[in-house]
Amino acid sequence: MIRNYGNIKFYTGCKLSNGIIRGNHRLLEFSDRDLVRYESPLHIRPLGKKIVNRKLIETCDNFRPDLIIIGHCDLITEKTLQEIRKLLPETKIAHWFLDALWAPRNIARLQARMHCTDSIFLTTGGPHLKQFCTGKNVVSYMPNPCDPSWESHNNAEKKEFDRDLVFCGVGLETDYRYQLLVNLKKDLLHTLRFDTFGILGGTPVWGQAYEKVISKSKMALNLNREEGWPLYSSDRLSQLIGNGLLTYIWDKGDMRRLFNDEQVVFFKDQDDLARQIRSFHADDEKRQHIAKNGYNHYHEHFSAQRTVQYMIESTFNLPYSQDYIWSDEIYK
Figure (spheres, rainbow, N blue to C red):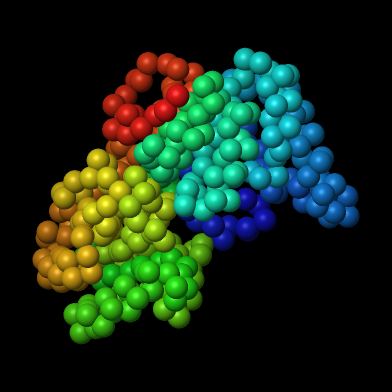
């Protein structure tokens, strides 16, 4: 992520890299997006793409990995992955994917990868995953991972904040979240300090500015563009709970399979959400109790190290060495 110059503070790929190292595995990173610029003659992107794909094959031949884990590396072609499989037939290829399945483009991207990978891991669960099974691969849910060096704050232990409630997420007026937030701000106007970033005219925050917002917020809303997809959430969930913010999530999408009422706050509608926000705002001891439980639960069960180990064991069809609470969400 050289090209971002430190402006991305919570990136799943970096957390997974940490998880690989924490598990005492040897790691070599390969960034298609950085290298395409470095290798491009006169910065001509199509030429750089061809070179980068060739360099990935060369790198794999030199490094001889047991497992290749690819993320959202759209510059790497399926042809390249097939060539690597021929070159290194014992090497497995796993693919992690964070984007939502309600977008047809994302389904097409996964369908292109399904025939040249041994496993696919998505932050969505349920029967939708079966469409990416080939009879030779495994397709599974994976949680949005956290890592103690990235989720380095614990707001459950704090009592002084710049704001009481926060929502960060880019959205237009057509987004259902827009009107929900408008109504919620009116409802809570004289009750607490509520800031929104990236929506309702609020400027989006990234990098250090985003981390500062997170570190100085008491409670947070985890609102996805669509709700009800099994176990789906954006990676915002790991950033909020993993930093000890009391987090409010819709009581939809089977999320109670991952959390209980002692770890997060579930709400059923706007009125229920507003009522619970007032309740926890008025009872800081109760807020800290649930936020602490959520923080501990997330770092124990959804750490990047644990998630990576699950990916390894699922890809190589090994017995599970730990109790992965999502392990029934796997399809073959």
